[in-house]
Length: 255
Image 1 (tube, one colour):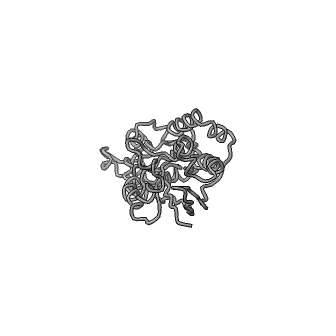
Image 2: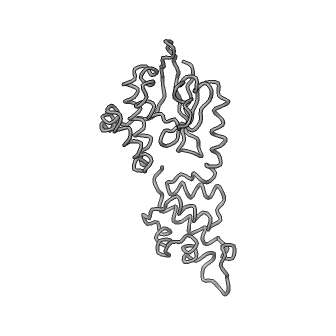
Image 3: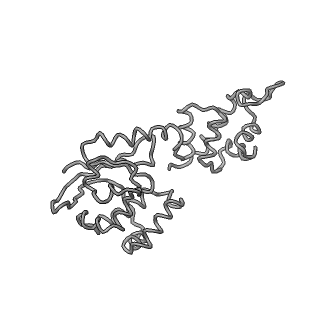
C-alpha cells in the first residue's frame, strides 16, 4: 500500500463530481443549478456518508477512505477503469475488485507455461497457483489435498522443510525478515495477525525471530534444496504484477 495523496485525491473527486450528469446518477436536474454536476449532498447520498465527509475529502483533509468507500465513489462518479485505478492509487489502496481482480485468473494460469518451478503467493504467503515443476520440487507440501499451502506454515511447522531446505535456520530467519517487510502496513489485518499468532504459538524459532524486528527485501538469490540426497540449486526471482501488487510470482531458475 502506498501513501495517501490527500490533496490530489480531493481535487480528483471534486473535478469528477462536477463533471457527473445528475440525471445519469439518478437525480432530477429540475431548475438551474448553481454549480455543474452533482452536489456534494448528492454524492454523499450515493456513497451513504455525510456531506461533511465528502467536503473534508475534497478539501484534502486527512480523511481515511476504505476500499469499499472508494468502490462507491467510483460507481457514483461512473469512472473508467483508468480513472478508477488512479482513484485507488491516490488513496494508497489496492483495487482488488477492479481491473486487477479481473487480471488474477490469467496471472494464476501463467505459471503452467513456465519451464522452471514457479508459484504465486498472496499477502499472507498462501500459494494460490503453482506448476508441475514446483509440485515435484515441493513434494509433500504443494501436493497435499484439502488445504491451501502456505509458505510460512510449511517452513516453520512442517518437518519436511528442515530436510528440504539447506541451511534451514539461516533461510527461515531471513524468511521472517522478508515477511515483516512484505506485509508492512498490512500487519494489523486480521488474516495476517492470525497467521503470526499461530506461527508464534507453534514455532519457538518463528516467535523469537519475529520479535527481533529484522527487515529485509525479497531480493532473491541462490536457493539450495535437498531432494533424494541430491543438492538442487536455483536462483530465485520474485516479480510483482503491476495490477496486483498484493501478489508475488516466484520463479526458481536452475543455477
